[in-house]
Image (tube, rainbow, N blue to C red; front, side):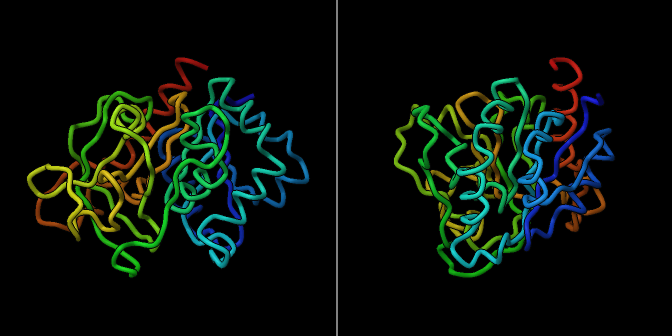
Length: 253
């Protein structure tokens, strides 16, 4: 079995599966785009994947809330399979709508170990869809962000990205991976550097095992330096996440 097989899980309304698969292939993964309905017919298929990515979009139109329907399907039909996936040292990444799905299913961050929803992602403070590049501060002490620079740029594109929680600082220090910062590199609640009003400037968090990452910015949209349209040319930071996952799977699984 090819241990670099990756599941790109989509539903009706998902719209970022193609570029997600493209960046995975660039790194060396063997991605397979599978709909959640297909997966329900053969749940055991999850076992053959070492990496699961839930990409962005508007699953089922977000008509009952962003990611709510897919998270409910996961909760009632696939939860044990995904728990086993993590317990076997395998990884999950949720991007934008995928992040919303992970938190509403109870997979992320699971600080209390009860597999229930502990945080949420709600409407941006602007009540507008926000689509721009943002500057982020990075916690480099995770599988996904090993050897990252302290600050990176990634694009965001969402209407419900405000992360709300009631955790204390010691918990935030454990789960925080990406933070919105101003041009001077300071964490900020000010718009537009913080595009949604997320508490404590959080743009991405990790679970208590370090194996599940959820983030609102889109790393799959920055695989080539030419995609950064400002005058200053910078490294394509998005692809680094996938390279780190590839290295982890190669060395640890």
